[in-house]
Image (cartoon, rainbow, N blue to C red; front, side, top):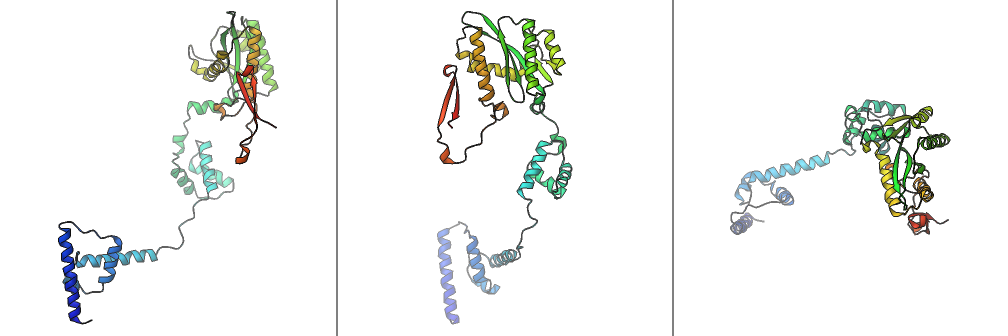
Length: 343
């Protein structure tokens, strides 16, 4: 190509740029990254004097700046290390570190690091600190304080609670029911029902409770009760002989015995409010069935929907096994229903 042809090509290019500028008016032209790379690759070899002769939409210094940026990005990509930095701590160790921090709120990262070394797991103390920080777990002094819920949950194995609740038969006789609940397992002991809760009757029911607890190997150390006058002094003495200390709730403070109060509400809602009680014998019969239903079948949210006397069965994993033969076992004429898989 001759010099005359080159000059003609430049004039044509200038004319096209002039037309484009007239159409755009005062609007600023925006170049995308591919456009910048293409112009920089095509024009960077031309001398600065030649670039000044061209009527471009950008200044020559801008073209050269784009070219330097293109080379810098290419060099950075070529210089990137082939291998990453330090390998990430394996997932099982991370889970174990978070578990130790959750189960031991007063342990700091140094204490957790020492426990890992005892278990034969060698990681740096800074790695333990980093894992705890990324999980949003605060330092040990800020985690050591426990809530009332955590405190009661840790003491549940040694706690019992008891109370009287009332119901009325069809003949208008007021019946008093004495109930005890184990905080840890939510197991219910219905000690009896009587229209006259005398000291002798309560004492005998207490002796029966102590024998049942000894047969079950209970580790109960405390009994929570209110200040009801139906509890005689011998009630506390019998429990004290069995190694169970009685703790009195505050005056008119049912929340101090909330688990027992909640069960009484559940018993009324699921049984007594749906049943016409004829007499004492009928009441004891209904309470006996409800005690078995509560302890062996009904799930309880307070213990992760488990049952006090029976563990949960293994979950069904296969989709084809879900449509099973489920059978209903009614109690008390269908007031309570238990569902079981057929053998």
